[in-house]
Length: 177
Image (cartoon, rainbow, N blue to C red):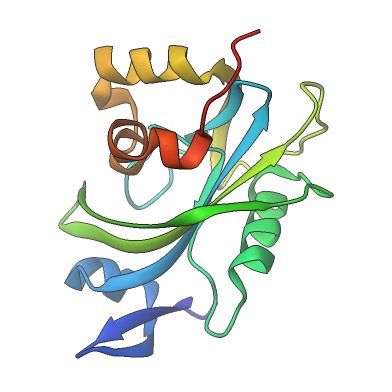
């Protein structure tokens, strides 16, 4: 199997670089994050235990890196399907954020990430890819923020950053039903 190549900045130029090398070197790179929503509830995933970083931690619905020359919206839809077996959602861009976080094993995520939300029914059909996802659950946004604050070690660094620094930009004002 060939190593995945993703868009990363090397000496100020966007360049295709092997994904693991990007994380080893902490290169700034393109990424996509998706939050599938049902009103004020978010579908979160627990990362598979076999993942090379942050295994077993809870994250947003889906996050990934676009392939070289892949459109971010196409990437978001592709990866939600590959990881969770979810299709047919309309992605809503919520902006571009940048963060840097150590993710363990000497690896660093330094992402320029386009964030998307997508509305879905609570009984959304899913087919989890066990190589990517150990479990999923729906949780109210504000309950999630409180849980992340109480138990940060159970969540990925990027989800902690999104909720601490970018919650309003990503979610706006949500009605609590």
